[in-house]
Length: 392
Image: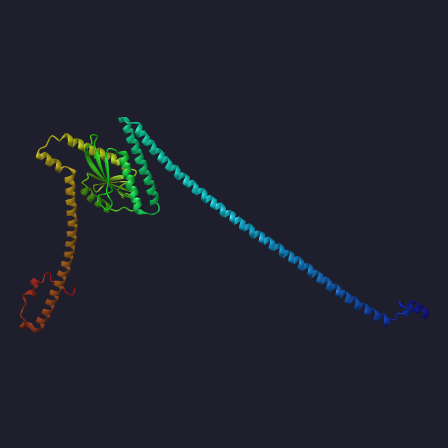
C-alpha cells in the first residue's frame, strides 16, 4: 500500500470550532478512547448510584406501605376480637338471665298452684257440710298433708344429697312416718323426739273399734355398713317404749337377710319391703288382740297369771334377764380364764423355786453330810412331780 493510500485510510477528527481536520494517530486515539472510557465509567457509576437510590426509596416506600397495612389489619383484628368477646359475654348474660327468669316463673307457678289448691279446699269446705262431704274433706286434707310431707321429703332429700348425713336420716324418718300414715290412717304414729332413746317413731295399732291392739317401734338407718349393735340398742328402746314389736328399716341388710327377716327378736327389712311387713305385723297384732278380747271373761288369777306368763311383756323381761346374765357369764368366764392363766403361771414359778431350792439343799447335804438338819418342806413328798428344774 502507498503512503498516500495509508494517509487516506487514517481517521481524522474535525475541529468543531475552526473546521480543521486533525489526523487521529494511535497515541492520540488511545488517549481519546481512555478519556471517553473514564467519562463513560463515571457516567455509568452515577447512573448505577441513582438507580440504586431510586430502588432503595421504592423498597422503603413498599416496606412502609406493607407495615402500615399490617398495623391496620392488626388493629382491625384486635377490634374484631374485642367485639366478639363482648358479644359472647352478652350472650352468656342473656342465657343466665333467661334461666333465672324461667326458675322464677316456675317458682311463682308452683306457689300459685299451692294457693289455688288451698283456696279450692277452703271453698269446698264452705260449700259442703254433710257427712259425706266432711269425709271427702278429710281425704282432701290427708292428700294435702301427704303432698306437703312428700314435698318436704323431696326438699330434704335434695339437701341430703349435698352431703349431710343428719339430713339423710331425717329424710328417712319423715318418709317412713308419711308412708305409715298414708297406708294405715287409723293408727297413730308418734315420732320420737331427737335426743330421746326410743327409735324414730312408735306406731300404735288400732282396731276398727278404736281399741289399741299393740304397738310397733320403728327405726330407720341409711348407712352403707351394717352394725350388729343396732339390734341391741333397738331391743333396749323397745323395752323402754313397751312396744310389742321392733322393726329396723335399713339400707344395708345383714348377710343372713335378703329382703326382710327376724334377727335376734328384731324385724330387719329394706325400704321396699317395709310396708308389706308392716301390714303383716299389724294383722298379727289385731288377731292376737281379738283372741284376747274373746277370752276376757276368764278373769281368774290363774288365767291372768297364765296370760301374763305367755304374753310379750313377760317374754321381754325374761329376755332382758337372760341377756344380762349371758353378758355377766361371758365377763365371768373371761375373768376366770385370766385368773387361771395367772394362777398356773405362779404355780409353775413356785414349783421351779422349790425344786431349785431342794436341789441346792441336796448339794449342801452332799458336802456337809449329816451336819445339816433336814427341812420337812424340802422332802420329796412335798415337791409334787419332781420334775427336773433344769428341764423346766
